Length: 189
Length: 88
Image (tube, rainbow over all chains, first blue to last red):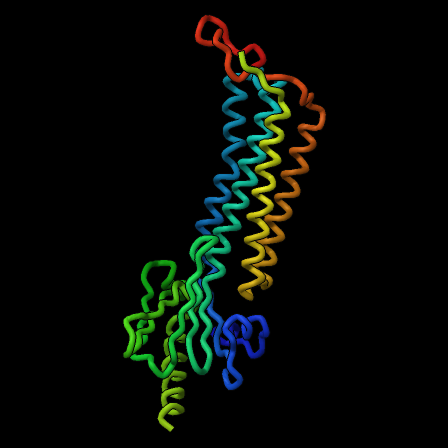
């Protein structure tokens, strides 16, 4: 089962991040499907080519301009700033994508969502409080590549957790329901 | 007529570089502190780092022979008359 690939038994970093309890075992560590980052990569590739296009255009219209002792260094500095800004933008987008993390233990779900560089939301839901788990796979690529949203609703709270674009959402739904039932038994004992 | 030396733009570039380094470190700090330093994030970080080094290297190579003492005209009242920026 593919979900097993995402199972982790011991990971000290994760333990520290979620302040893992002594009896708690991390069952799943979920991130968005890598395919959902491809549009950003594609945009990055397009924007990388823009200065080459601009250079080609200007060089054809004003062939002498790049020989100017002022214009040439300014153009190089500007291009350098453009590329470095682009790398920073791409890296920040990756952080935004990759740092959205859902950790499922045998006791709770921890939802860590990164919003830009300076904003992060962390919320938790106890497994025994789970009332409903809904899977939403919508669109061509999600259907053929098996990724989608998993919405976890609880009985006692208005808050709900959504795993966005995670791989194998149906398997996750089944596993969550099983874990929830196990945890509920444990809490009734 | 207001003229400034070319190295003024180099200072602006260095200020940008300082901001770039600060934000890059902050991004990397996020990766490490959120237990996300995995093979995937290492590859992306390495990719960005390599591109940055290459960009800085090519910038240096292209600009190493530039005379930064050259002055450039920022504002010239004559521009509003019948003459243009001669250095361009």
